[in-house]
Image (cartoon, rainbow, N blue to C red; front, top):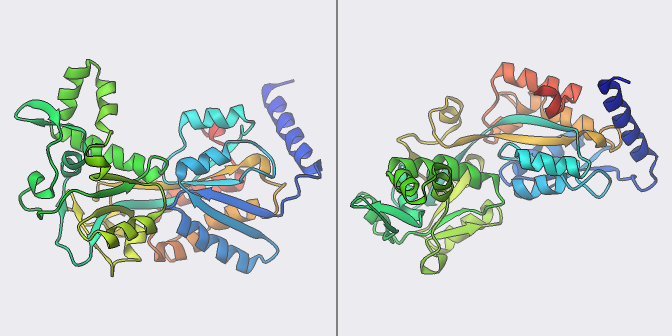
Length: 352
């Protein structure tokens, strides 16, 4: 038998087995993952259920990494159907999926979002560069040509134009997809711009190790300068409300819905907005995804219908509710390709 027929037979047998199992009787679609994607997914679920009252969709958060981890644990009613993520799934995560029997994964990019840096609305304007955040949060920085423990405790030590505020940065915890984008596009870029990458490479004798070291954050002074937030953006907002000189990392959508409480900074001279993110001018942006467990399609009522509805033009198009609520839309050609991927349930392996 040809490999393609073997794969098809195996997939068909697996789906038939699930459908035949009395235990596989869950009647709602379960979604979990990215806190950035959470409000978009909730809007889609609400509108989908209004027009499809026989289906139910439960959307939860927890972070991109946590959602993908749940998604990859296995096939069956106890495992979620869709994982939302603010970063692409990692090869190691796909391997974990496959090891647990989740072998057919459909990747769906549904739009773009920006990562913004904001402080209390009554505070001063900040004009940041990636190097400013690196110099604020790195364990080691270059001073007078030497790699030393970070001496910066106040923002005006980094840039005299900044206020005399103690550094207190509320950053996404390591389970969040936002953290990985923050590391790559802010800490990593700042490390290189300050000459610290070269100094770490000389110290460690390996550029890859140095690049990894660039992404670490300081833990001195009891960890008060770099504070991991493992919850969602409302927790970060609450921290700033309790510390008016704190600065937090948010998604654009959350900031726009709390602009009466927060003052957003520029990054690289660019103010974050749908327009600057769509054009690529704003430097700290990322695509948003959801991942479909193909083995659950045809078994979980409403799963395929929800997935198709999510990427429909009336939802993610320029005049749709997600764009109205802050999503930066896909270009038309990309959106068309995404709809085809969902309609045909083209898996990641099949696309490569």
